[in-house]
Image (cartoon, rainbow, N blue to C red):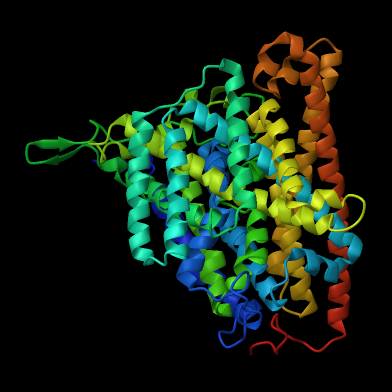
Length: 607
């Protein structure tokens, strides 16, 4: 008899069903009763159509753009850390976070921008909290973008180093994307033909990657070199015109990235049924693929590295449950391309729930691995191993080398394509922040791009990846909480129901500020221990030669001290911004009490 409970099968089914209820039940109710989206209402894409930023786009195309712009390493490596507390708490957060908060933020940020005529969060924050509030938000966003860039550059370098077949394959996909862009926009070739050519080049790139593996010979210095190569690619992505590089490469990367999700979920659904016998042929492993990791829950990290389940779990698993980066994409880009208001739910909410499936697939890939894969939290390649375990039974004709290269490449393109947008966004925010004044040189696109990559490169080659990840998660989730508060203020001003966003917003802000305090304290405690002749904590927070060569011990102490400073700044700016938003919310509620009732669209409430 098949033992479904011992395999991931039921958990995949349960999560998909709950996500379906979230979209067709809760989300549609919010759309109908809180925001009251109206297909006849003119969107900014039609109001200000310029063919550059503002242009109406098919909901299907815009969904793909939204998904690929928000889905990165968050839903892949977040569960790698989150499973520290057992797979069950991680799964519950992936389901509950997305059900009640994640899609609500992505969709709400898009609707807020649409209702504000396509304005992004900078001008909206200025309207709600004044000039200081806007400056406060931009400062926080710049810090946040540096941290996320450091994290992604560090991980891309680690993946190239761990999977020698992926570098040539990555370059092949980037060149294929550039070629597709030229065919599409310069030579006006049919999009289906371009897609076919592009996918053929993707397959060739993977073949070449397997045939021509690239390994660097400098040992501990390999990662800084890989990180530098990554920064050079990102510089080109940030300064070249969007149709030449970023857009076609992101479009082409969508196919292998989404194919990986489908393959892993199919593999997870097949786990109870192996081996399959057809006549005299037996397919797959000799026994069902069972869950290897403990369900938990563990209230603290059993390895003594990360800290308590609250607040760490809720910042470790960011994208896939909720992510502040998504609010920037929704409000700054996708909202300007929305054809009709009713498309906001399938584009914003639908893409977020789809990203939840990526988080689910990733967690399943970790669940089928032995606990030894997670010792020390340094094996960032574990996702690839789990994906190969799940998919190799039904992709048997593909060798492990091909599957390893494919899934390793998927990791990189998830990170590289979104990081290209992050670098570009940093350049735009820097240009807005330092457009005038004596520091206007930092508003120059080349200078700001070099700064936006140089500083993260320094963090990437010196800090341990999980330390960077938790700072990234804390800043990312705090940004989500702030975004939800902006949404709530708008709802309060229009006398629409606010409890559905206010409660998640307060939870996220309190949780993420607590996580930043914990992380900052961890680095401060590490420095204090060093003064007591214990350098173990200082060294575990760094990596590369700084960790292994004792002559760099003072550098390690200095890096820990810098991380303390980063944590203090993020916490201080976050608290300041949260106070301003709560004050604005309270004033909006008070103002709303003396005005005639209205809905979020400014009209009358539905009877």
